[in-house]
Image 1 (cartoon, helix red, strand yellow):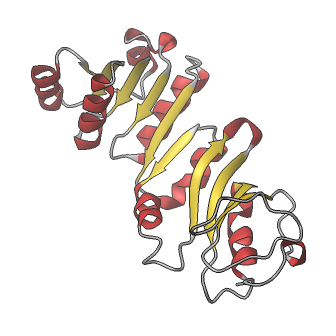
Image 2 (image 1 turned 90 degrees about the vertical axis):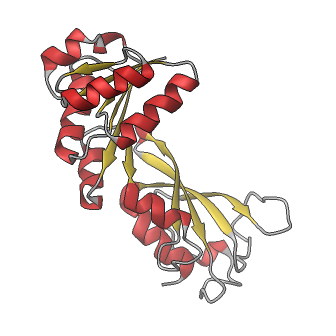
Length: 220
């Protein structure tokens, strides 16, 4: 794959190294001459000095033939612009943007960015066992349908433990697809399936229904 990485800082550097190791063709766009020079000395001639938000620059590096553009600068607005230009002017199939401010995530998704990487959510999702208030993990975006696959953990003290699914008032756009239980094979739930403590419930839902879904499954 031909992948363009906008931003050659620490995130861009390690990402580029990993992509190159996997055999991808990678080009980095970086404004800083010092960073660009350092990348080229270590990784080969893979960095071009330029602004990933500018149409001319993106055209010069062959964005029109790229399979993916990943914007990982330290500025949310720059990442958004770079992805939007790549998507709408160069028809790049896949765009990924790093987000520093969690409040911007909804805006990015509404504006058509395929994947958003929110460092705050990643940290919370990886320590969800220690942070009981954050019990919903994003698994996959079904972008063309406006849906996503999420996982909700049912805590031991949830009021929904012992209740059948048919008694829950789930959001209309949410479908329970799988329940993973400790020491047992995953089950496809029916309306009569009883929720148990520590169930990992896999659900197809919309981003807008996340909070309602979590509250219903946990009885909050």
